Length: 316
Image (cartoon, rainbow, N blue to C red; front, side, top):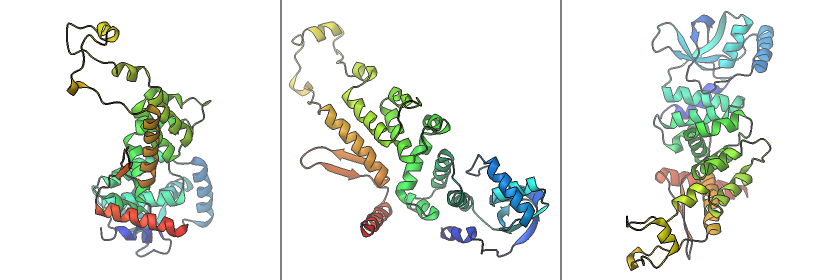
């Protein structure tokens, strides 16, 4: 981990140690760069600036692992792309010895600080960083974010295919709304897909209400799965439904009374809210008293959560 916490130093315009002019043709873009889409309008503006003033801030490079004498672009891809369009032959650069995790973290920091990064690209990059492997707390420290911020993006990364239509159709890019949509999709896909309708309001409250409604008014699949099934091949479903005395339940077969649907739906909605707030799985156990269990990864995660809660209390 040594050096990872100093990534911000590499992003500073003042950190120009070892700056040199590198032929732009020797630089290859990083195919794993988190940002996969670039604003053409933004590049055109930068091209004009480079033609007038040159490249003011150096890009960050690392040696190409497979091609001697060439470099992989770590940070500054917009400047590199604009320089190509501007016809620049050499570009100021600093060369750093960076690991894969450092490279990815540096690219994420650059994109998060300087431009709006597509939420799905952002989430997938965070998930890649966490898989290197780094603990959630380490990823959060590396990016200057909270563990909750990291946890939400890891959930989004796990459900990219479900969420892609909502983002690409400009229905929502709000991270918490997207995680709520994943929860709704898990419980009732049809209700989730209904939010793709541009005429339907889509926000956190609307999705929470839909999640709560799943338990109150279950769909056909839920209704069908809750139908009692006969263990006796000679007893038809019609007989079981029409004559409740046909096969009295033994004491040990008596099913426990289900909780009222509205209460269960409210607990589901609260659980989703708490998971978004705390950034970890939450279990709610009803009763007197009601118990809320936070399922944290380790003691480091607990310490980080306590620090975050104390910081929030100090602000208020």
